[in-house]
Each structure stands twice: as C-alpha cells, then as structure tokens.
Length: 297
Image 1 (cartoon, rainbow, N blue to C red):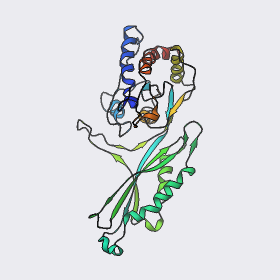
Image 2 (image 1 turned 90 degrees about the horizontal axis):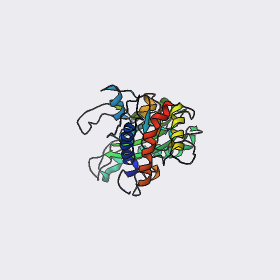
Image 3 (image 1 turned 120 degrees about the horizontal axis):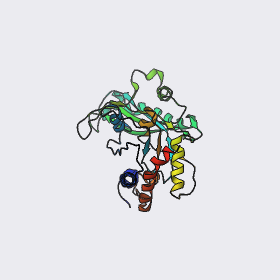
Image 4 (image 1 turned 30 degrees about the horizontal axis):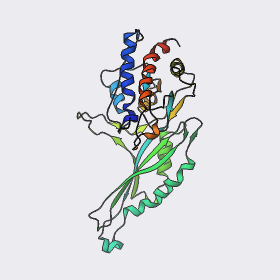
C-alpha cells in the first residue's frame, strides 16, 4: 500500500491493535497491563510519551515496543539529536546603497561552509555509526527584497552518536563563530513550546539523546525469539538512521525499548512511502507473542 505515512508509521497500528486483542482472547496477556500508544506531535520527538509518562496518568512502562518501520527486524537503538540556531545581525540599507549596510547573510556564509566541512571530525560508534550535521533551514529579516537584510538565521540539525555529549556538540558548532564576530553572531539551542492540536503546551528543550540496548538484554533476546517463533529468518538486530520516540522512552526515561514494525524507513517521507500488506499482517504475530516470551526470560 502506497500512502502518506503508510511506512512511517501507520503500518504498525493495525498489527498492534489486532495483535493485542488476539493475545488477550487467548490468555497471552495474563500478568500484563498493556497500552497501545498512538500519538501526534512527531515534529518534536518524544514529547507525547513524555507527557504520557510524567504528567498524567503517571504511567511508567516496564518495556516499550516502538512501531516505527524496521523491515521486520528487531531494532535496539538510534542516534540522538541537538537542534540549534545561529543568528547573525547586520545593518539594513537600500540595496542601491548596499555599501551603507551590513548583509547578515554574508556573515553566515563562512560558517555554513565550515559546517559542511565538519562532518569528518564528528564522533563515531561501531554500531550507531557517525555523527551527522546539516544546515536545514535559513530565513532572513529584511525591510523588502530591495533592502540589505539586517538579520539571518540558520537552523542546524546535529545527529549525535553514542559517546558525544550535548555540551561538546554545542561547543563544536559555537567554535565555528569567529571570536571577533561574537558581538553580531550568536548560537542558541532550540526550545519547543508550541501548542498541540488541543491547545496543550508542554515545553521541552530540543535535545534528544542517543540510546542503545545491549543485544543480550532480555527484551532484545525476547524480540529475537519472537521472530524465530514466527518463522522469520535469523537476522541480527539493527538500528534506525532516523529519530523515534525512543529518544524519550530509552534515552531520557531509561525504559528498556526495542523497535519492530513493517516497512523500510528509506521510503519514509518520499513518494515511495509504502508498506507490504503481508508484513502488516505478519507483524500482528510479533505483537501478540512477545509479552509471553518476555516472561520466559
């Protein structure tokens, strides 16, 4: 099925709902309280489970299964992220007399070029891979399209691998700003306080820690045994390249988490966004069988 969000991540929802219902009807959930959690606010990873666990009704799961696409493999980690803005201030002037102004865009050009060259110097983890950095947005403040902009802002998406600290990655970018420009160029971490569709506001910093479950953790072992019980071919555990709510579940709250879902993340956010319907059905088995197999660990 090709559709917006089919892979990322509506494809796991039917299997989770029907899988838990089937497990309930066959007594496979005895001893468990199971929640299905589908949420909005994907543009700020982890904010929805954060409120679910820490605000009301104060539920803290023992284990979490994330339904983001894993191509029917068990995933156990992902990189984190820090979102930043670099702001340059200039001086406005008419474009016809641009020598009287100071173009804020031009002040950011060498910093943008330095960011582009920075990636080979970023951290590396043998399982999660290299850190990443990208300028993802730019906007300016200008009196008109015939005026020198007196402010320019770029957004920086910095993907953090394990072993990199929040302070280190922030300072790594901050140090790209020349010392003699500190009076007109500054960096700041981003903060999220946008109202949800209900109007509710839950302010959080846009820092999302990396996380990784050990292969030998009972939840990972149970996940692999569940795949085997379903008749799937043996395969190593994997990881996401993109971000998920695991940055809260495992990264911030320390709740053991794995991922399992139909679909391949490479199709997410593309015109090929799709999921194999046979995998949607097959994933139902995983969600139904996993709780009982966890109890055997």
